[in-house]
Length: 406
Image (cartoon, rainbow, N blue to C red; front, side, top):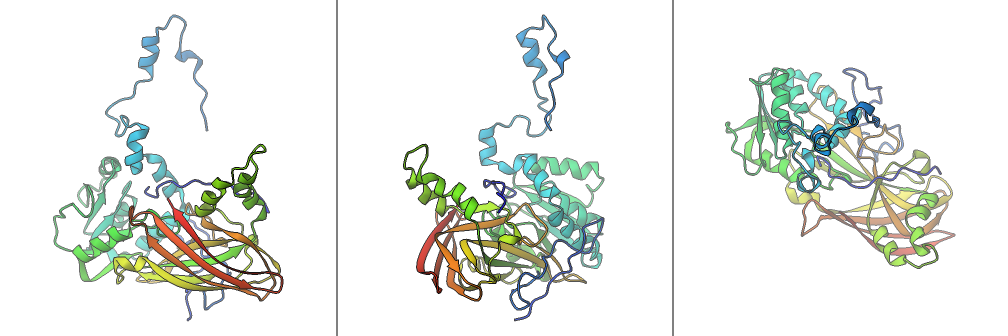
């Protein structure tokens, strides 16, 4: 198994019979996204350069003061006065996070297609963009004929968004509002559409779902639309011996010293990473589908059973979670998947290592349940409990493991 590229957390902005989206190439105004090849049975899947320093910069005889001055930033540039400490508290002020999300073609192109190919939904409608970032979704909506768009962004990126809106000639249609959704005062009593890209790693880590639900309950008209309106979380199992050895077993002997106490911490922290589809050992199991237009905030905490059936003889080292989102109000059902068999997104997948290595034969099953809850101290963090049992011909185990996404 090829070693995967490690990925540390950073804040993001910071399936009966189900329907699978068509897997089509993403071109200018394509139909959809990355929906995975049939990896789940029909009844288990919804949708499925560094620059060299110029030698002339420091001429002989230039004073230190002159050199220092040549590196001074223009204070008029938004965010130029920020330090790393500021970014710790206001991570979405940094353009790098927005660059990653905008360059996620699966994500951004799906939203663009939803808006441009369903202009009948947006024409002459008032739209609220929750967590607008650079304002890209608001720009799509304005271009699609929205009457007015209120783009709410609480980070300093709101200042950039205002400039972007002005430069592109949409100031009469888009109003950028800097502040928290829970604290701002909208100039209108109701909106027709709420659009947001609220999803976090593991769907729910550092997400903005509760903010979207707050906005829905406060401003959305009775027959209003939330986009996207469905999100589903899935679970599968993988063989991952080489990478588990590198990330977890490494702590057993570090230059001859026992550091296995850190191993326990490493096991508890889910790894956000890209999983090769060839590592998948079992079916994938739908854990939870959330209807964003109807759900209550508490519904994002849940316990769901799972049954994973081995498709071949192999070892299981970890469980893997991923999510799909869909826009069901469109003329043609649209959405995308973050699964291992789909085109990669910046969400990747979430790997949860098991304490046991399961030796499993084709047709044998791992059964259990996953409990997901908001952390009590920090609601944007996620606590996960997995109970699993396996009674195979070569291996028997029953265990409960706890994970913390921080």
